[in-house]
Length: 186
Image (cartoon, rainbow, N blue to C red; front, side):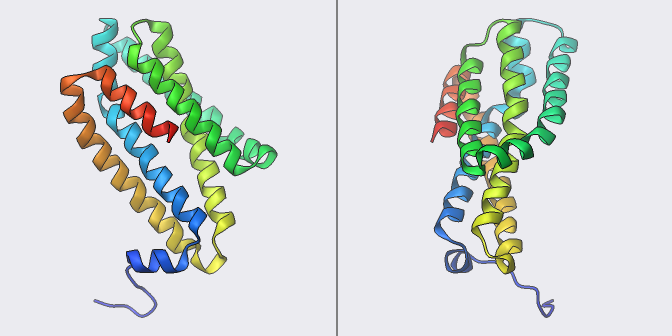
């Protein structure tokens, strides 16, 4: 049922109403989420296999990631205000790519602690920077549509990344991490 005032966004409306920088942010965000989706769902299995450790330790590492994210979230806004959203987003992606490189060869508890710690910092910083950059590049009346496209890109990246990661991890975990790292550096 059609309701007055509600419309389904289309690719044509995206091209027509959103500025070029916003479309670039959306493409980058989709790639970044796909990179995380390639390894994220499989992290507990990968860490347990690489460290040959009990699942309790793996759970502790994932809890450490969550704790770091909780701390990093409020700091992200301050950093975006200080150095700018674009710089924060770029630094977050580079740090995320570096974290993936660590994960590609991580065989020690220290390496995996560094990986999950960096990943915990990168996520909130990149999301805040992306949302700020999009809000700054889109006119007020088009923000709802722009953020709708952000969520579509997030969902698409997660689905495609997880499917590709599931296939690639069967063949080589390190290769999957390297590909995810490359996607973050793009």
